[in-house]
Amino acid sequence: MNLISVIVTTYNWPAALELCLDSLFAQRDPAFEIIIADDGSTPVNQAQAQAYCAKSPVPIQYVHHDDHGFRAGTIRNKAVASSQGEYLLFIDGDCVLGPDFIARHRQLAESGYFVPGNWHQNRGKYYKRLWKLIIITSITCSKQ
Image (cartoon, rainbow, N blue to C red):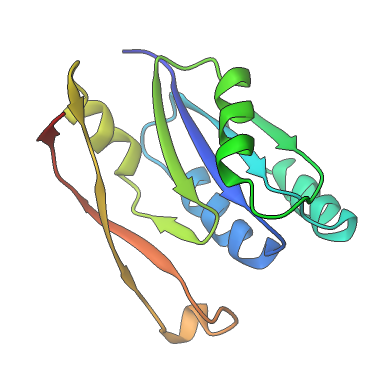
């Protein structure tokens, strides 16, 4: 497997998205792209998130649609349509990933299997500005 596409769903929370992107920018396996799937953020939040994308060390795209209620599935589908990877990873924009997240998925990837992740909430000092933060801590594998 070569390129992995990481689809990050977001909506009006650029501070959380920045932490999520920072964790993606710090991945040890650089063979991936990021596609931000924005489910209708306001123009101010959209501009703030897009500006942060300029820091990306990997290819990054920003896919957006207007806010007509919760349509995360629709924006994820649009992100998939613009992806280039052979393998898709879906995360929310309030997730912070360990530095081996991509590498571990690459290691576990196998046709006919679904690889879910586990998470926990962290309210430590570093993340004080966020009321909720999801941290992906481990990956398991199960047959579809």
